Image (cartoon, rainbow, N blue to C red; front, side, top):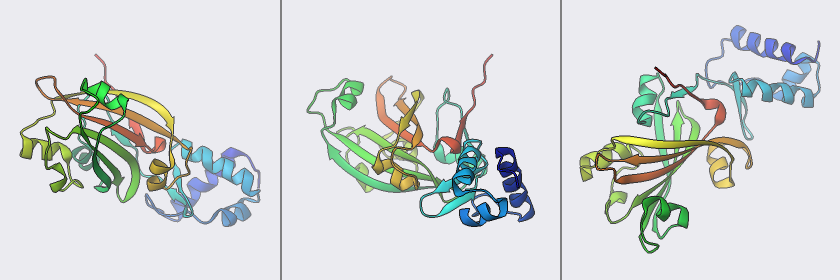
Length: 233
């Protein structure tokens, strides 16, 4: 069989269709695929990587290749609630808390909040899932004095709702910056990909109606799990 990318793509698409593989189901092992296609593992891997870039499949460390679900669609110009948006798009969202601590943070954080160097913040790290697939690691910073006792809440749920219900703080608008960044190990590992892999980095500032900065979020997304949609008039 030809070793062209188009042939590899056609074979994988046919395999998914004929085997009736659903989203997040596993493909055959690379060795089996290479034998069926009569190509080297290097050629196959190159083709699979390109298919991942197209959003057809995705890979996880030491687990293999899987059928990719639909991408999570986000409008960066609108206020984002991960859980509600996921449900609306037919996903089942879950969250796992990786860490929570109080600290005097680095300059980038207190500069954003326009606070003194001695101001203490909560640092919260979470991994977000869609249909049990880890798609994003989130680092959040919130003023410790304003949100005293936050760690007593269930942080695997919606922090937006916690702030509203417990502290009477409503997020009314956001400002975000989107970048491409290489993942450090602490973010790559929960996502099941190697350190140094590319991610879509979204820096999100969330404000209340008084223009006070409520929290500072840094999200690291699997780049093939998300797409941006912006409507203009």
